[in-house]
Length: 270
Image (cartoon, rainbow, N blue to C red; front, side, top):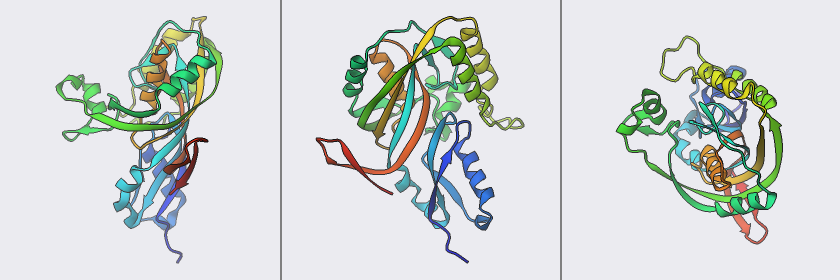
């Protein structure tokens, strides 16, 4: 019998939770029946990309793998925000802005380096044995002190900008949200991700709107614990509007070390 791998890297799809991606992998690998498997580092349900699964005794090294740096490709929708920081949240619209490529480049450069920010209200960060998102859904977030998280933005590259009509935006958002796999029998708080309520709110805001929205695309190399949802909001605010992470795709996981500062080149070890 061949030796079991210590870890694998799978591609999580939009709409899958990390646990769903793990269980799908387990079903495809019957030789792993009975072996412990865990994921190292979360990906939001609306995010896609690389997810590390640890197998057997390697599960004990989860903290090591979780601390690795990450690289992402992501989009920021300008002129719309939600309480989650991505499309899977209750939306609100604001006045759009016209921004030039130069303005975007300048803002991206301004957020490089160390940053310290609170954990998102909708996150799995545990306080007194309960994740933050449960406090938020219960309406009791003001009863706890939200801890701060240190992170580092190593590199942030502007890839381009596109415009999208309200009708096309609604169509894309509906596709994203309806792809979400939920346990319809679960009574656990937040198990349905408020999917129905969120969809109805997006429809109410966009169905008869004639507005046009801008979506900017970026690449980022960041330290462990960096929330792209938070980064997207910060960038949008610096551009003078609201914004959310319209798409997030994790492209690399590893330890990145700059070996040519002048050229911004990186090496990866996993």
